Image (cartoon, rainbow, N blue to C red):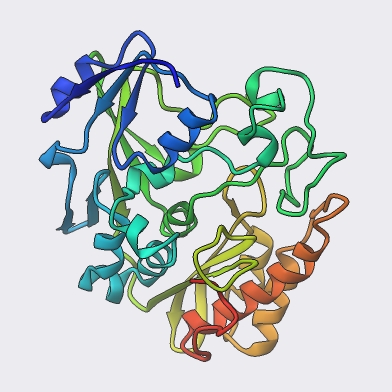
Length: 333
């Protein structure tokens, strides 16, 4: 591991002043340490923001929630208001990784994780995401890779929190010493591989992700998240589903159906949402929505099982959100 200096910052302005010359931000450091050990990044300076108190905490506002980027996944999952009004977010944060990691990992860090592809993560392979012109997953071991939008780079989006926040139409707050603050919708936050396989988000080198804002749910909103993995706990998702339903009695006024581990960027399915809109939530409509979500899927040689798994995950999560089914005992976490 290359030598680096450490800038231990206690204020946002101090951290922003350090974001130059190849500096990398450290909060919980869970993913950062893996990337450094693998030689994927070799910063000359680590900017420790963990002790900036103004970037932590959950604030209820008239418009919804403002969550500091340093708020841990455990704090979010255990917050009473989030549990009752934003269940999808509580579920997603509460089923990520292990209890120990949830007490370390921050919301900002979860959103900023690098994609999980063993070819990218290994220093034995120089791939598209490392500036080369080849992707080894197409002809290699691709059982955990993308089934949508996988023509350039089929690595999958790893953030469980992003699944929930996309369904909730959240925004991220980015801060720069020169340009001040700007707000970016989560749906526009991630960069698709076909645009630039080496760039994960729209964050500029001098910017810091400082907060996430979540709009107040409409009346009658119900939501849920479920994760599926090779093991029932402590595993990365091979499929996860987030569902937000705006209900009028048993009729769905509006729906958001989100899939993680399906594509390089967390994916909403307008096809599945259209199946539910204006209809009662029943086993039949939930199954139809799950099936519709697979329109356009193009599995690789070893991940065709995801085309069968995602409809089940979506159907069961729709019924869980609607209060018509308990949590799936086969779900992970």
